[in-house]
Length: 327
Ligand code: GLY
Image 1 (cartoon, rainbow, N blue to C red):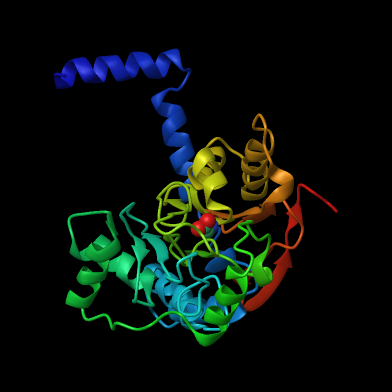
Image 2 (spheres, helix red, strand yellow; image 1 turned 45 degrees about the vertical axis):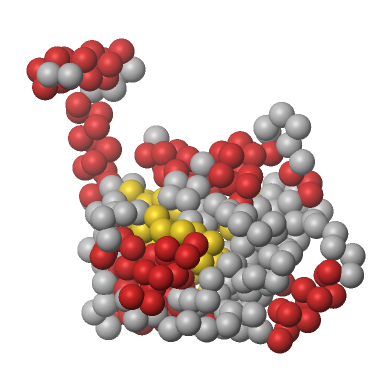
């Protein structure tokens, strides 16, 4: 379409929708009126105080907000006791630990790795995809080979504890999504620095005992994670299939763009899942956290038991999330 025709067409469309150029620039002006006293802020899904502490320390020691996200997520990837992220993650039903992760910076660039084996720091590899390739997503063997070419170490991600759990599971081989696995699950993190730059990341070994090849929401930009530096960011945890079906994180950021605060936006996105025809929401968990340009935060889940860790004003606290189901 020729440029002039395009401009004419988009202006007519804006008028039709009742959106004027002024409305767009007001949203922008409000967004850049920073509440400097509230910043910086780091939030993460679940009780991961060491991860938020490391992320916050990265920021105050002069690291970028993207460094903060990477360093924070790496803490949980290296924590072998957590059985839903990185090394020590529960395997698929064939005994393979496969990781999904994505990262997004304040310029709107993003990178993700999907169905990654043998490399613990999926978040760092996702960053490499973003920064060192012309692509957004790399999967499987291609992602793994790219990792080795970037100097990542090959290691067995299946720990003795996870192997034992899988061997026990094989006796019944019953597949149910686990609600609030050890009060943990996908680690999603969002941070805003003192200049108002926002980044985010999420990393997971996905559902325990999933089908070989299954991919969840965490490496899918817009589902597991979304950041728009003018507005804020959101990240998801829980049953990825349900997050993907409603493009949850993008939805939350768009709701914030329309004027909802992070708490309201998280609640509306959970209700979007719950209110779907034939929703089976009583049998699975989804939780969201969100952060806006002012450093305001929110979290909400379907089931009880979800929490968010927040590092702000030099305090690192775990906050119990409200939930749609209260018993
Ligand atoms: N939210 C993680 C997954 O479903 O894989």
